[in-house]
Length: 76
Image (cartoon, rainbow, N blue to C red; front, top):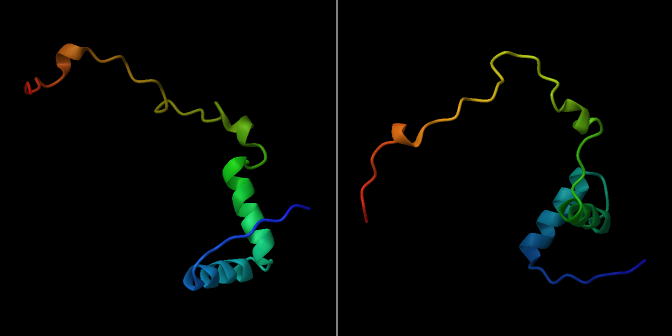
């Protein structure tokens, strides 16, 4: 498995150690998961099925607004 080296200050290293400990995992795994989530975001299972699932009359597309209803703007 490939390896990378990180150069970080002591304060940041301690914060990374603390964060990994809270997740009960190694720093290496914690960093790998963080990188993975940034380069390939994963949505929760079933996320795609939520589209269109709200059946509420208040959730509808608003009507188009006329530009004439806008406030006059100051010329620069």
